[in-house]
Image 1 (tube, rainbow, N blue to C red):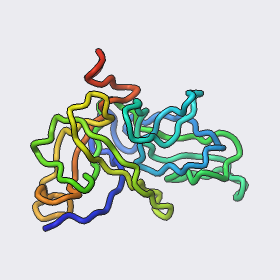
Image 2: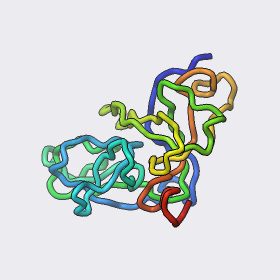
Image 3: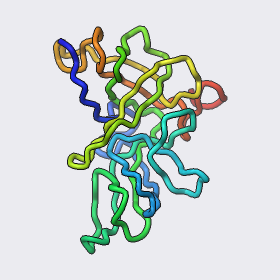
Length: 197
């Protein structure tokens, strides 16, 4: 059965921590940052780095982690708001972001338009931000273009095959489900440098 193209970003699969926090940390978003960030989006420190995080751009810059929500003082609602996504406006003061940075974390994510099967396990992989959903707060990110490049942000550690016939388990068609870990991240050095690997 062909897989459906329904990207959902990076969803916690396993790690050192336990539900519901999975070793998440707090970070700050600049209230002037008008780019939306959705649950499951990779985030990175902004440039020039001043302690704020923003939606990460695909590339080889180390990411901080995966965004899983935020809290901010809403200008329109005149009260603190907890949200699954940062809408890009409406905050009075810094936004408190929640980010999974556990260097041992693994995430479930959808592959893009090319199949990522067992032969790709152990390779590194790029992500694409896709289109987030402002109703659900979920990311539209997915992974694509596996390669041996040491500075890519994620490493493929598995593919999903069970239960057979379920969406995402067909390894012969695009949009299958993949398990990835951090590769080039602030808390986890990539294969090009010494450190955690």
